[in-house]
Length: 545
Image 1 (spheres, rainbow, N blue to C red):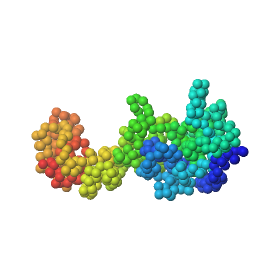
Image 2: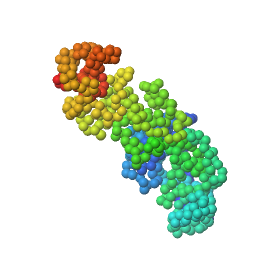
Image 3: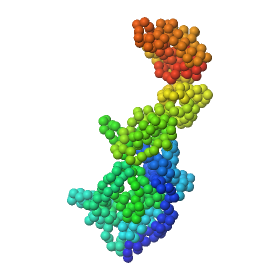
Image 4: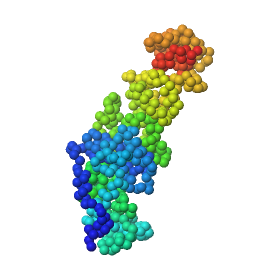
């Protein structure tokens, strides 16, 4: 009996690996094209770090005319959640990161290098595991959990590294006949790699982000096929990335320590290893310390949070690009109207330590993004968002879409557009006073400098009786406000008041604030003249009177 006999008994129906090498040939792409992927597990919501990784991967693929694909790594089926795959693909779609190739929820894969679901690739892994056994580079291990625990205890007592390696590998050199007898007798087993590594030797590796790193060689005989017949992550990723012709693996830097093992797997399988780019995690400041964004503690860790809050996908994308490449912010300032796709992304400009997540900065970026939208775009986005997350707002806006559009057009399309909306969940509070039924529910008038009720009545009465005309252009309207200020003992210009404050009750800004608050109950609003034009003559007079 030899290794081939052992391999045939374990995997009697496995195809020759040449079948898969021919089925999945090298991709016909131009030189320098990057083939990369996002390979999540369907075990819960999509983390913002996964979106970040996907953004980088898609950007690198697109700008080299390569391929970005999504592979679902579901070999740990105990942790899989219902609709997990759909949620992953929907989240990517929501943020404009749809892959070029992926699993088809209708049963038809998009792409020629599938299946893109690892649990559907079991036969492929069996062929490559069989190949390793035939070469004498993998073997069945019959150790029970109790035996493995005893090995760990003995290693700890001897103050040696824990693991299955070297002299601790009980099944590594088991005679083939004995192994075959155990298999025939139904003794449970898993398949382990027979590592050729020597921990006293070093490997040098150049990471596309972190640069040169040195590791000791891997000497652990890791599991490659579990007792349920499915592969471990380590083995599956090597086979999949080879057959899908991945040439750049972009992933979280928690996998840096696995590089020696992964390179060894590629070597043992006879594959050319891809390049690796390990992305530093997104961090959060917590009581003066930095920690990773936590699924358990931080709502902003979930991609769904941004959708629920109504932060536009372009804002999230721009913010993540700010984190990813430090020169993006400068590029955006100099190219305000350009599409983000025109920015040249560079892996070597990514930080090697975790970027700090800053919600204030994200909302500031979002204000800038929203300020570039037209009123029609904002209305459409708010209608879409409010349909799912704010029924009351949706009903308000849909009662009169023409009027709603006028509201969102206030101070839009100008050289310096207003930046008062950071997310769609802000909108209701920002515009509520534009609707009579909601205006009447607001109890407080936010009067500022002028708070005396008789003075307020005098200003409002004089304005509505002698100075208000809905047909005035903006210049005429403002000159009338100055005339009103002068008549009532206020400076026509702010600078006049500042020069001689003792001569005036206040200035024209104080007068316009009284009119603003009377019409909106707010001290801070967009342009008052435009608000008056949208409210219309009847509403303005009713509120003033």
